[in-house]
Length: 381
Image (cartoon, rainbow, N blue to C red):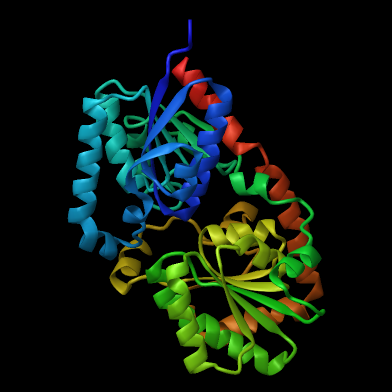
């Protein structure tokens, strides 16, 4: 008798969620003979075999104000997904990140008897900790990518399992900067600076200017430096190229797409938007300056809710100010450049960062996709 086919509904948001979803789908396919996925997916998930109901770009929205503007469309999509999964109940629903969107779906589906799993814990430990208590009513299991998260959620009666972070599995413990430079066509031994202004259009709008201006200031002090600006989508290349060529035509800046790992590995220092890029820089052993800007009304609201002293993932994991972080009005070309220079001038600080980053990398390595798939499989059985 052949094994019954298992159906899993899945919804991911952002490029990082698509990568995580693709790896998870492949791990589930290795765990069981017959499993089918459908939901909100990006190219990685589709390539792994997920049938797309909607495209992942529809959930790439940041900030409270921005979400409010797009709320009608997001609500229609969410309600459509709920109706779909209730009318054709999957054996399980897995929501990947985007908690404000996915938890509402998970609550409704769990009420209808569908087991629910949320992959990547909502950052209730950072802001609005009161949310944690209600999450247990929405999900059967949280899959945590950071080691401190299960203890936090267990205080609120939520079942959470640390599965490790998939980026820590993907990136080597001993990065090869020479090979990365070769892959990017960067010859010679001069300084290489990575610039990653974020994956969302809103992030690029707010961070591209100060990042490139900081690079220009840095170049005045380090004439041999080269800059590699990495965007997440091909559609962003033209905008970035125009800005650099029109404002800083003599800046030796190459613009590339979708190769953040190689760029960060090749770089001596990096300037990155807060978020996944800062974790990637940590895992690539790249000293960094972390920056973030959001709409002023959004910042005014969120800053009053934040309960932790740091926003940069490396600092949260280290429990201290391992790397400089600049927020909102503090994001200026002069401040960014000053921190860039300090990484080159303070050898002790740089060596300390390299030691801590390797220790943190080891702690995050747990074969995340396989660990998550096995946890989900146990619930299915």
